[in-house]
Length: 207
Image 1: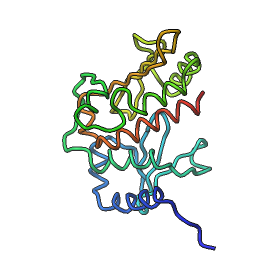
Image 2: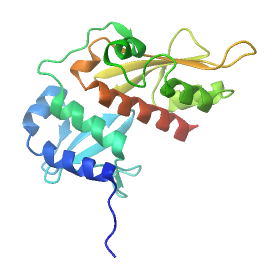
Image 3: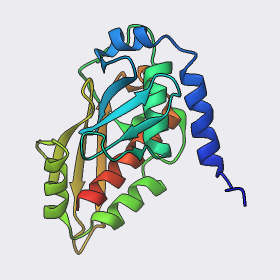
């Protein structure tokens, strides 16, 4: 019986094919990627991924790639978008922007009061210490404000700040995410939603 492939898997495979149409040497130079004849390597949220230079497939492993794990949809699509579609000469503004301010222009679920933040608050309510430890496991650097506040490297060249305030008797839990003002030079707005979804998933795993 032929295994049915999900639409997500189909889209991921299509993007693997699209990746192969782009200049890999240009990617290497642009982002300073470690590479060999077979793979490009990139760190994404403190985890090392490899992109097969012949198939475009993205994978990672906990044990120096002896046991290969396929990147999931959010992981793969974020990596493809940054490597293939980031703007020429993209660079950091070194100014923080609230993700909500991007949502006010672009729309979508990252706007204040949207499902993304409600979901995050539900996951981390009453778990501030565990969230802080998870951020530190992902290489987070403690920052000011919030009950847990950390700067994380989405990629080595692209940081973000996550701030979380736990629920109390008057207010529900809330989360704020700050990104570099030039984030959309590195990825599409829709991809930013994939990337932040991946951040939440990794934090839950570490917790």
